Length: 355
Image 1 (tube, rainbow, N blue to C red):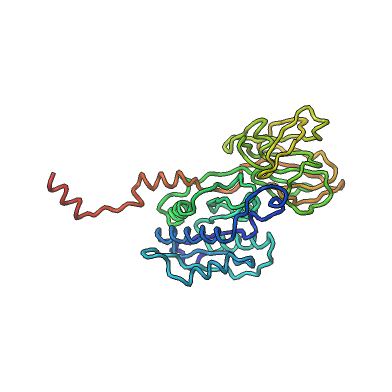
Image 2 (image 1 turned 90 degrees about the horizontal axis):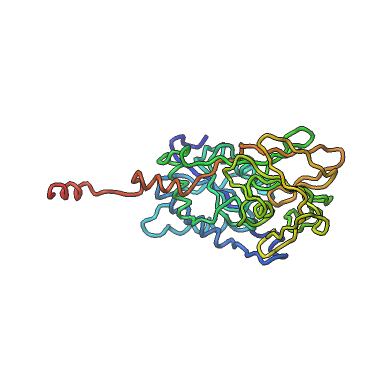
């Protein structure tokens, strides 16, 4: 539990490596600099402090976000602003995905009322795997950003703070998300929030998936026609909304041997032809075995799992993914209830007397 059960707290998970993978080299994707992540975080502090959030827990890192935040904390906030106490988690930093997993587990143990995530699809996948029912505020700072939204941090901080302090009931403004589950030899192994893709490549390599060579099957929890990344393939063919009951799975092939070819944006500035053999509905709870005997599985665009002919893998779509805040709903609720307004009772009484 938190240090004080009655003291509202929030976790901020900012992936320092988000938006800095190999796709920056092979396409024209922009870099999301550390300086802007720092600025977003300080804007979050302002909103959270204004709403009475007492403590913010953050993950330390070796790339520069933590040091920049510590430096910002040495200077008083702008006039009239109050920032929460910022506590960096006491953890060993390895500079890998394990840091995110450990940090989220520690935030959950401390009883945070929400976690604000700054990152791309891969970062949000990691947070979702450990967050349980803690509501996430998903902010886009990665390469492929289908799951998180590009929102102003000030407003995102207000939404997260309103829910963390109990002023807005989280159950009314949170949404449950779908998740793609991968079972390896009958045991649940990992999850993807948007896309799970198999490739006949025999190694994980640079992790980020940006080439179509060897792609074999693609499973999608949702698919939007205006998305970037692997989910755009399904979105161009048969869009599936985030709230739709089911998803899609596609059998892929080399373009020259396929009955259908889709030209899809696999990364910012990178258009690739993808051959399509078949498009199928993916029903919740249905286990679909992989057809490839060996290869790798990519989760939300990053290769994570190698498998061989002795392994049996299957994919399931489940409605047990993370909870995310609907920022627009939070702010609409706050407006309807007057949570961000104050009325001068003396002036109002005088005005009523004069009517």
